[in-house]
Length: 220
Image 1 (cartoon, one colour):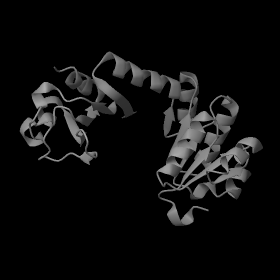
Image 2: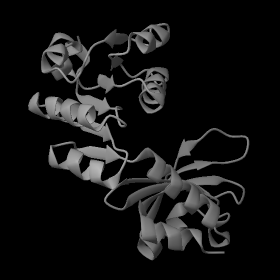
Image 3: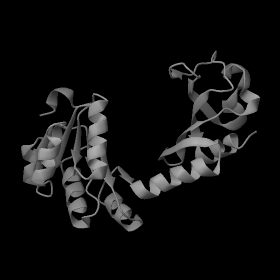
């Protein structure tokens, strides 16, 4: 099903709140997506908005029939049913899918999914709590830890950066972080370059180690 666009096609298994929100967002981003659930009512509900099929992904034969191995990435949005989550993830690993994301509901569940071969495991409630803590406790407006400490944040610019070009600030050498995007008031988001001037009222998108970003965000 996804042979012609394998590099972009994503399989989403499970149409609960997490899986349906993910699949819907990917579809809005014009990413090719196929959603799968064994609940006929959920399939009927989402069929008006998404490419979706009714199938039991705990059965490897069902995954074969929908061409799961042709997708470049798969997301297991089934979390509350531990056995189903593990079986589905194991099936995808056995099929050789190169990028498998899975939802976990506890740290123990996360460890199990990692052991059987999931490449990325997310704890939505825990991750959301961490993002809120960073936002409430500091100057960051949003916080996403991508992997192994590498983090992307949205924040207001410290005073020392106001009205300076990025090449003048040399933030990578000073603080170990990099501004990757800027949104000035009334303007569209733009990717940052060395000639980008930091407007005092702008929003910055900054990447780097989480601890280094925390320190940078705490500067006056």
